[in-house]
Length: 336
Image (cartoon, rainbow, N blue to C red):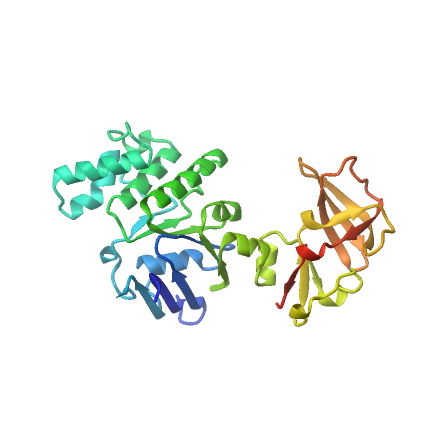
């Protein structure tokens, strides 16, 4: 058994429509595991089941050898940071962070020591006497993180903690979260809908769809080897074609992929050159979009529209005849 396990978890609010269905997930000690997926996929519900805020209608949750399925939220001893931060407006930064320690009736000396440590780790030194309304969004987020960590929880749960920050602060804070998580070695579950944010800080990512986990793996493996069509589209494979088109696209199907249904490739991995080249697919550029570092082209071919990204200058113009080639090592084959 691993550090944590969710087994056959079901959640239903009306006993008919399942929000989570037969969900299984392993949690590794010391990792940052992200739950990623589109709105309504069940990622926040999964986090709330782990936190004890929602009781599963079926299945079990075990953490560090202890059955947690029916343990109430206040006895789970987990640190939780919500999207809204949920700071107490009438308490100072110090008292917000110290709140959980005071409930545990620790001595004032130990509370001072623990709060001081978290203030330093979370980069909010000098703000201890301020109230939440006197803080910026990024500062409030750091206070919420310090409050969750100061109780030394077995598990840190982060529910879209960066969604209320502007783009620059999000970059800073996701770096801070990863640094703090690694420094403390705390097992962390992070919920987000932002793929770039998720892939940049996670050790593993569980991609969810319709209450189930489609794939759980390292960001690198998910990015290069998506398990399903849904994941392929989600991580940027804009070109997905039926295997029946492989011959026309001048693609040889490896023996180990004879049972595949689709092949796909990223726009940036397709080679686009002058027309009438051997071992290539002929097409005509119908749309050109400027991307800053290059262009994205939509090329009409006999197998459908092929999306190509290229930084070659001068740029191709709409109406130009071109050849597109799919490098063998860049192709991904999917069974479903």
